[in-house]
Length: 282
Ligand code: NAP
Image (tube, rainbow, N blue to C red):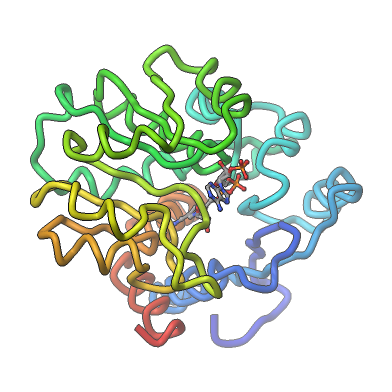
């Protein structure tokens, strides 16, 4: 996108707040690299205005859009159809236009899986440990089921919320955080889906330093947080010899899958990744 004209096609993201979204950075970098006449714009949409905003996007001929907090679940009744994957997660983050209506899917699942698919492991034997039971954890659990993990261990601080979350999937076994000393030594894949350690609380970690030594060398530690990069959790566990995966990979890959749905062509994923690294000063 060099110059916006009357022919320029519109893509975007809706959320509240939206100021800190990194999606415009990577999507516009990809659009520019592909030489396409599109522009990707962030839109601040309050929950009370969601229906009006979707009707408006339809009226102004928006081609497709991403959906972020707090609308990923609330958007579903406004869509004619959502993919089986989005149904499994119970959330939609990518919407595209059909002739007279919107359709949606969830690209967080495959975005999360992309870096794991690069690693050879006997996934059918691995029992991952997931910290947290919020929105991102829902996509993570569906992803781990897709990978073939037979049991998914979820640790959380509120036992009622944890039980409600676990009730959605038979593969989940739930534990409170006091069980970490027993769980960590046998954990081959640890995933942080909590915001603990996220900017500006960069000195925090979801695993206290005294327990880090229990994580085995060769384990995979995947932190969904992308600012800072790396997080304290990844810094400390890397010293243990783990394979560290950061949230930037999930962010880039879920974005690339979404853009692929809208543009129907191969995407410059490396350019998207580099645009984020440049923007974040990494
Ligand atoms: P969310 O729905 O608010 O869920 C947050 C979860 O973390 C809840 O289970 C919450 O438990 C728990 N939690 C919060 N503070 C905690 C604390 N101090 N100690 C222990 N548990 C705590 O948020 P989300 O949308 O799932 O996002 C979670 C994180 O994932 C964020 O850092 C977000 O940036 C990241 N994320 C990254 C990507 C990516 O593409 N890389 C995508 C989505 C999300 P309670 O309910 O008990 O508070």
